[in-house]
Length: 262
Image 1: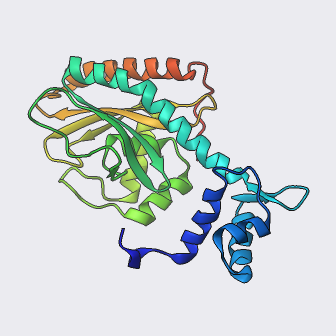
Image 2: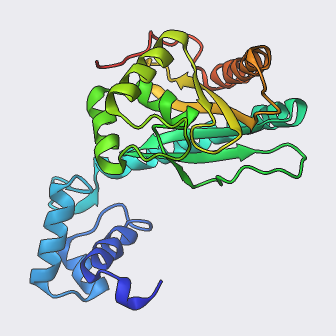
C-alpha cells in the first residue's frame, strides 16, 4: 500500500499491539523505550486502546491485551473452523451435482463469501472468496437477513440500498420484508435470476448451538441446471444434506430454536 494512504495514528496503535506478540505485559516505559513515541502521543494511543477494550491494565498498572482482542480472535478461529469443516462437503456437492457451492456470512452490513467450490465445467460463477454479495437479491443474503434482527436488515438497506440488477430484483423495503418472512417460513431462500440473469441459486441457514444464524450455504447454477420445481427440490435436498453434515461436524445438531428479534 502506498505510504500516502497510511494513517500514522492507526499505525502507532498497531505498532503497540504488535509488541504483545512476544510479551504478555508491558509498562508505559517499556513501550516508550521500544517504540520511541513521545509521552503525550503514547498516552493518547494507549488510552484509546484501553477505553475500547483492546488493552487492559493489570494490578501493577502494566498493559495486557484486552478482551476485544480475544473476541476478534475467537471470531476468526470459528470462521476458519467452519471453512475447514464445510469444504469437503461443498466439494462433494459441487462435483457430484454440478452446482457451485458458496459459504457466506454477514459481516457488519456486508455478505462475504468465505468459501467456494465449483464443478469441473467451463461456466464459472463470478463471485470469489472474500468478495461481497448484495444481500437483498441473493439467496445467501436473503437467508442471512431473514434470521437477523429488523435493525440489522434496516442497516443493510441504509448502507447499500436496494439496487436493481435484473427485472426480477426486489427493490422495495416492503417487498424485501415479505420475502424474508417467506424465507423464515419455508427455511430456505431462492435467488430466481434476481442478481444475475439466467442464474438460479438456493441457500439454507446454518445455525450455531445458540440458535443464532452462523452462515448460509448455497448452491448455484444456470436456469438450465435448475430449470423447474422438481430440480429445485432435488438441489434443495442435496443442499440440506450437506448443511446437516456440516452442522454435525461443528457440533450444532442440538441447536436451540432459531433466535430472530422481530
